[in-house]
Length: 268
Image 1 (cartoon, rainbow, N blue to C red):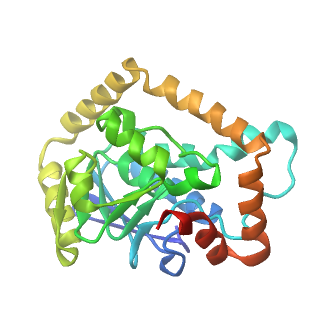
Image 2 (cartoon, helix red, strand yellow; image 1 turned 90 degrees about the horizontal axis):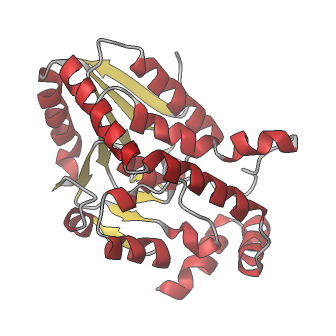
């Protein structure tokens, strides 16, 4: 299969997916999400692949969903709204559910849906210049999936979700979001070395263990919480809010740069 927005490489039992929109900081457009989901489906069915690495091209892992003007959905029947609204989160969650162990190699910014994508992997390795955050709260949007309550202490969780602030890789490691921080020029080599260690383990063992771990999260309420959050996101999208409308007008009329300045400027 030929891809436009990602790169897929398979060698030595390891598949590497590279998000490849560096000029857009690997923002998750509809096209990229479609290709990412297709690549995960391909890997899931490939029994010669034991481990998956996800990384980004350029200076970002991913800046999140593509919210630039012109990215709005086409007109569709109201009965299609549920699936269309939650397509992005469900594609991202394919990485959570894929049978092989997964590694995020986070280079640069991992923000909003990009942060969720990074956290969805089983192991997270970050470069020293990586930055993590959930800034979408500032324009009255919500994280595409609630993962962090299952991963980090709740006081750190509240800071990220309530302020929209970014944290650096070293803080993310202290907060239990990252396994290891390495120099930027060693990131992919380190991710590959970890993948090779996992790939040496009999795949039936690692994949059965992963299923057991995910089942444990489900016993802790993960799937129910995910679906409840999807309902909240649907309600948020249908709710009129003066702050949200004002920022959306800036985005549509003045462009993404002006929108980000209006959203983030007061927090500097």
